[in-house]
Amino acid sequence: MDKIDKMILSHLQENARMSNIDLAAEVGLSPSACLRRVALLEKAGTIEGYHASLSLDKLGHSVVVLVHITLHGQSAEMMAEFEAAIQDVPQVLACFLVAGENDYLLRIAAQSVGDFGRIHTEYLSSLPHVLRMESNFVMRTVLNRGLNAEDI
Image (cartoon, rainbow, N blue to C red; front, side, top):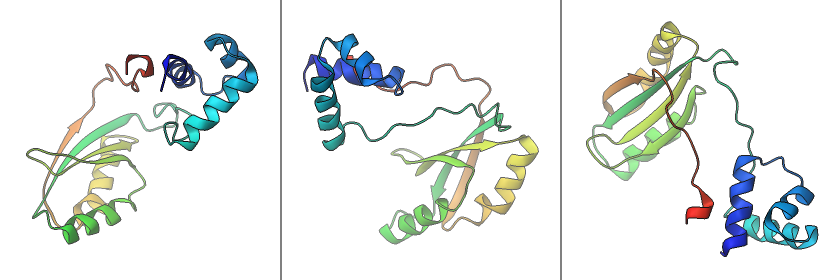
């Protein structure tokens, strides 16, 4: 990956809807050369997809909760069962397997604190192999960004 590829990635992170002609002008390439590079970055898996960044607040989900999960054990079977079950919880925006005191970290969107209580009762409390859960309510997002491609 060279400097131009990094510039392409950086511009696409800022605005994935940018036209190829505008992107090419920004990075100093012809449109056809730019399109080839983007296609190669997609084929290599460097660009995994293009997504709309939605406002949870505008969609009525103003409460974000980070939930730390500790399982009874870390056998492959327990982890696989937990990971399969978490897929069925629609309010879970992200699930990370983490190292440290806990096993998983979930990012959950809820409409209200009461709605999170419902999510906890209906979904989280029935997840398999859970020993302990700790919930942290996000008060304000200070920083939420992707990797700056030009710095790699």
